[in-house]
Amino acid sequence: NGNMETGGTVNVSVPTGMSAYGGSTAVKANTSSDSNNAPDPIDGSYHLRVTDISQFEGFLPTSTWTSVKGKRYRITFWAYSVDRSVSGQIGVLDGGGATGLDTSFDWTSNTWSKSVYEYTEPQGGVASKIYLIRSLDAADNQEIYFDAVSVVQIGAVAEYDGSGIASD
Image (cartoon, rainbow, N blue to C red):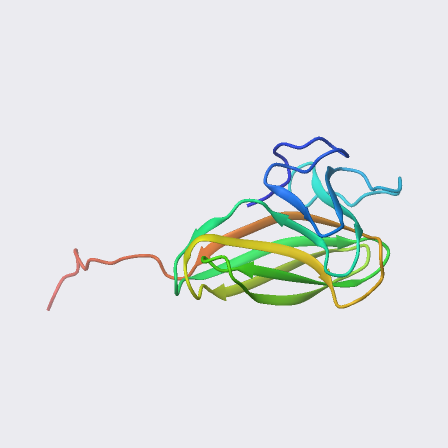
């Protein structure tokens, strides 16, 4: 789960657990790359600024998590596209490390857009991972901010033992 606060140096390196993907550049930020006003972060004081982002480039958290076959997971993140609306895609590597789960989102120009994706884990294992990329349009050199990336298991997890129930 990434709130972009830990590690990294502003405008120099990425927060702990994040990495650029493809030919894009990612850094911990609280400003924009072209001296325009950056959006306020959703969570904390910093966000991840990804620049030089072209089609099928973006960022990925470097850490993996252990998933359980058949369990449901919710991935939530916020994205802010500077000066133009673009389409993006979230990809999920299942617990065995195979790509195959993905969905597309539209990120509105100059507005934080919350994206939520839920899925059922098909395999389970220690290699589950996500990546967030720009897709479906060919405009180059876009600047996009990401913040408050989280992955949580969802669904019923409570157990009931029936004690304390009176019978007739």
